[in-house]
Image (cartoon, rainbow, N blue to C red; front, side, top):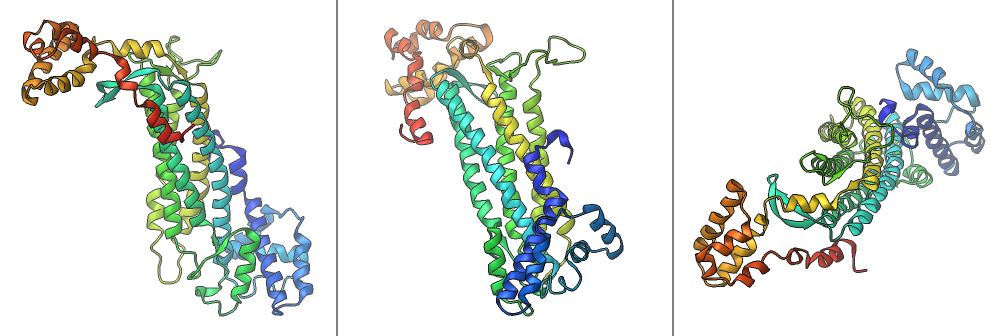
Length: 435
């Protein structure tokens, strides 16, 4: 992970010192549980806690691992150096490395999720505020990139809010999915450790005991977790892409805030580029990059192999750090996004009423004209707007076939913008609740 796309609140979760601190707490709580069961002396369990305020020497652990070629054994050796070999002789009793590694990974993912949820809250708050601010500011809706019918900027923000709110709900579910721990020993049978130890450790660490583990916690949980992050990343890209489109010179309905002293191009001083949302598009790709490996990690040999391990060492920190950064970058973009209602209106009127074609089509059918004939009448006048720059309303008013079905007032009424915003309040109530 490079610092450029990382926030310290998230990176701290994945630092070696944090990991070793969690390992220690798991081992210490396990010793407490075993002592309460009479499996080990209470004095030995108490002795482990002598290291509770110690800052573990990461370099020393790495030095030991260079010899042992085993990270958990290296840590346990270092712990024994701190509290004494005799005092440490019952540490890790009946446990296996995966008990520590998997429980730690899931705890880190839970903590990371809490930070991600804060980011989701900020994004949703920003979208909600901008939706209400521009609730009735009319802009042209586009399908296939082409002018379709009027909508509002408020509805644009509202639909993005609804999407991110669904993502927030999925993330909460993913947190529950991943918040399990396992202290079940070799191949998960509890043969050498009482299930009560697992229950005690999980309670202390804020996790739920895994119902059945096979030395490892089942990786379908992790697949669901990272898939959820991938969906959220795609939603971020969805919003970012719309903003990038709105900032195009020939559109310019909104643009990223351009700060004093900011430069857009080393060659062209006039440039104001959507660099933040372009960056978000790239970050979304990095987050989604973790989804397929996480799905492939579900398949392991028998009760355990470590084919998942190298993958998770990378995607655990990288994906949560990238997504955390992206969420806060997106929130900042939305909060400071500069919006141009006048340009939105000008863009909508660029083709001189053409976007009201469906209203005229429907009015003709309601007046008794067949749909085929109505479509033909409307389209022939619409093509004059596309090809000759004509005014759609004026062309309709000159068309004898159209006027045979609709009066002049009826034609003009079809160009009322208010028609397209009459249900905005209903949509807002659905999205944000009745207020």
